Amino acid sequence: MGVGTAEIEFAKELFAQVGEITTRKMMGGLSIYANGKIFAMMRQDGRLYIKATTGALAERLDAAGAMLFTYDKKDGKQGHMNYWTLPEAALDDPDAACHWANASLDAN
Image (cartoon, rainbow, N blue to C red; front, side, top):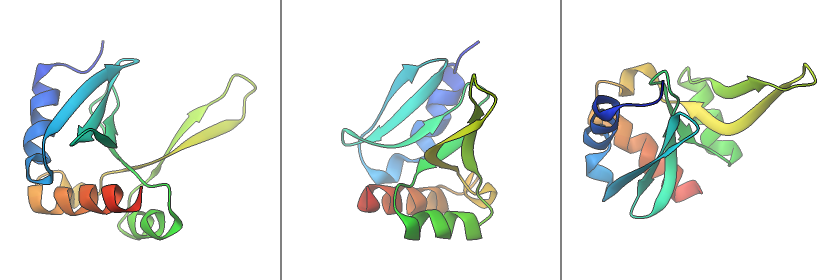
């Protein structure tokens, strides 16, 4: 089961202040773009992640309680992607969510 219409609308509304929000379904999840540039993704369970490829932004997300996107590899090791969970406080606060989104767009 993948991301549905309700989750897509939630993401678009949450990040509406960032710019023109578009989405693209991928592997059961969702890529989220502002003005054509990816800055976030949503897993099929609805969890939102912010792209953070730079050390400073990743450090700020970590300090805010965000967790790095990890997955199990076929060889039993753990892999990761440069995406961090959107801090809990930002899930119900479009201003805070857009703060993180803009930081990601500026850094990446």
